[in-house]
Image (cartoon, rainbow, N blue to C red):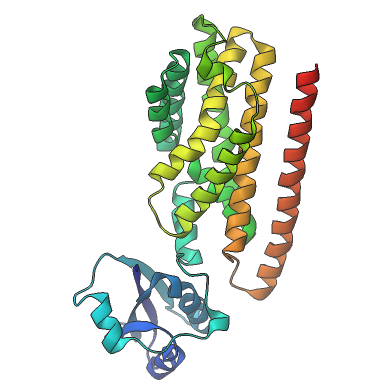
Length: 336
């Protein structure tokens, strides 16, 4: 069981109202203290899965007040232990109609985490360059260990999850940031692979290359699994390192192979690798979108949630149509 400490700053005079609002919820501990400027700080200890409901209600009620602010802090441990606290201090279970999907972090915490790894920063570009270089070398040498090493450092998970989250929240700013990272990362990765392919002679029948010039059912399943795993990793606040490897498996190797073949003049084979990359990209984003939707991640306000649902349905349809079109193009390519 993971815990969160919510710190709420509001003007003085609302102590009874705050306590009254939370008395039916599963609060493990609630403390308050006076601050300067006629403000009060409430410290609320609760489980992670209960945090979104509490945050939404506090924001709806007090966000219009001057000085209002909420801080969300992870709790590594508690003394006495949580089981002992629960026996003495926890209140009754919250209304089931207002409960959120168990075992996931709040919407605001999820947004902050995803945004931080979706930005096209200098570190992001450095990691893309390094992973592309290592992946190209691994593919050319048919060295699985080196290819896996490239996957470990590939920063491909964040922007793809950012795009899916931006859709279910109808957040244009996050969508733009994520798209910039994805597009710039793809262009940079291809450019590095093209340069390497232009200066290095290699046999396109190398297993590591030949394997990634066609689309197989297993690859599609892998891409869907990667998108689901990536989404769950973020919503449950699990370390994304290993999940990032799964996403990189579906995206980075085909992209590097495409660039290598393109740089060496194997254009027909290059189209196969690029189609595989596009299929995997679509599958990852579609599965991520579905996972966020199933976990009921949505905007706070009802009217915004309604518009976000419409956008989510539309995006699912678009991603599905793109997948069908790509699969048709792959079959046409095989005939030609």
